[in-house]
Amino acid sequence: MGQLNIAAKRVLSIDVFRGITILTMVFVNELAGIANVPGWMKHLAADVDGMTFVDLVFPAFLFIVGMSIPFASAARLKKGDDLRQLLFHVLIRSLSLIIIGVFMVNTIAGFDEQAMLIPMDLWTLLMYGAVLLVWCQYPRGWSKVASNIPKIIGGALLVLLWFLYEGNQNQGMTTQWWGILGLIGWAYLLASIVYLFALTITNAVSHILFLIVAALGFLGLFFLLDGVQEFQGSALQLLVNNNNNHTHAAIVLAGVTLSTLFYNEVLAASLKRNALLFIVASGALAFACWQVSPISKIWATPSWGLFSIFFCALIFTATYYIVDIKHYTRWCQFFAPAAANPLLVYLIPYVLIAAVGLAGVSYRPAFFDSGLAGIVWAAVFSIAIMWIGAFVSKMGVKLKL
Image 1 (cartoon, rainbow, N blue to C red):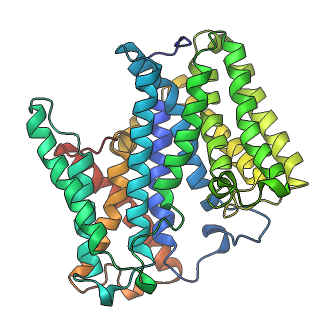
Image 2: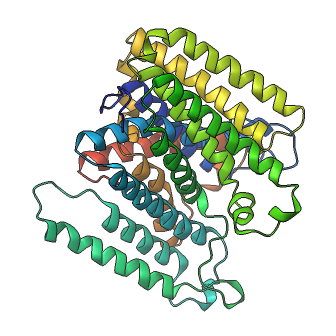
Image 3: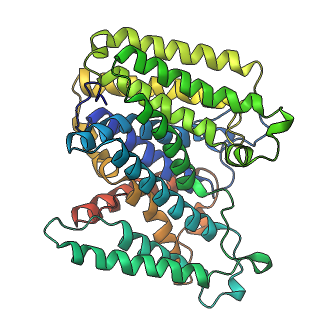
């Protein structure tokens, strides 16, 4: 099994791209609750043929997940892991994301607070506390027993909260749409399985071609199968159509491909040509696909996936040029905590909102609920979250799946 000459290291341009994406994600999540803002600052409706920058945030995160896969795999191979151990690690990380995603989505909708023994805000806070206990990275000096005790407590608390949850119509917790983290988990799982097979191909060019064909297959195959009668009602259709995991996995694989094109020692010799070809090809495919498939983030259509890949490749290439070629790096320090601890920074707003809600007050003054004041609030809020994330990270709190 080849490592394809990719070093097991952190890459600043990828970290910066990740940090920018996290900042934008916090900003647009906050902006979603503010009225009277321009349409281009909101998600477009599912039946509108188009996308805004907001519709690019989630696929950008998927793309970054893909860009990190070759480096994470190289690191584990360097430690001596084999294919089976790599797959087991992928399964654990995917399952972790799916579990957290399902718990999160059930705090947003589907609950019957009147039927619950504790307030929903308290349930939410306890849930995030349990997540911290289970997935926190404990000091290396701790013994295995000392590290496992809080994980066991956190796991037991999640089980208890699962029993305490009361949903609408006497239902308990449901998967609903898996939540953002759950969707990332499914996409990461599917794409990683493809990548692990690709690791057996030691020729760099053949490896890249395999990843591209796999990504296009995810984008196109299920889209075509949707009209096949035998496909209807199957378990595969439920996995595909309910959450559009095939399109999301394709975006992850596109990130894997671009990362390999940029950082593989063999392919890096033709970096400028390869990057240009990737950008031009993804853009051309996006426009061609748009003629038969409308752009819709909610429906995760192939054209939306291809346009997302095109814009992500363009943004990352610009970031790479600024950071790795021109070495303008001082401004990157602001994004470092979010890049190193993205899951924690993503969760912090939800923890704060639940804590303030439990206290019986609104975390956002009414003056900032609309218009320009709301946009300013969302910008300041997102920057504040980045600072809080940096402070908490310096305190040694880090989530690691």
